[in-house]
Image (cartoon, rainbow, N blue to C red; front, side, top):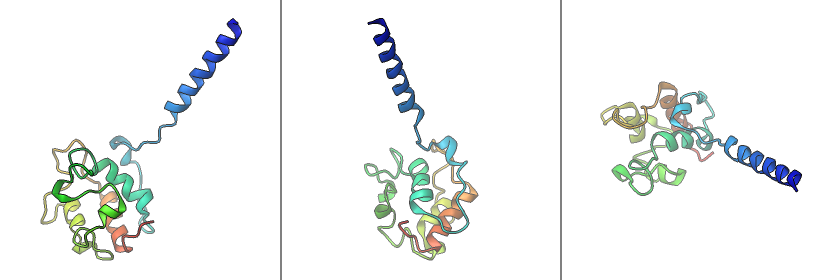
Length: 136
């Protein structure tokens, strides 16, 4: 009986380590380590994970708060208005103006709990829009 208890305890411990050790959540601490390529930017691989950490957080551009009447929680929400994302024309996209702080308040703001986008991230968003703002 003691042998069976030891085996069951070992199985439970292994299961706990597997569940908690396989967390692939991207956080603010490691999002800056992800390099967005200079071409063939993928919305699902590069842009949405960036938005999930930097923009679509509670109190900001999530589905409940919709700061500025904008949710960045999905492709459909992000591209709902051609004023926000103007496919193939990042210079006329309000999203780009906001993340660059050009004629707009910088987003995310300096006082936010996350850091503003770095140059690679800004260029990645610009490239994604320039490439047609595809749902890829």
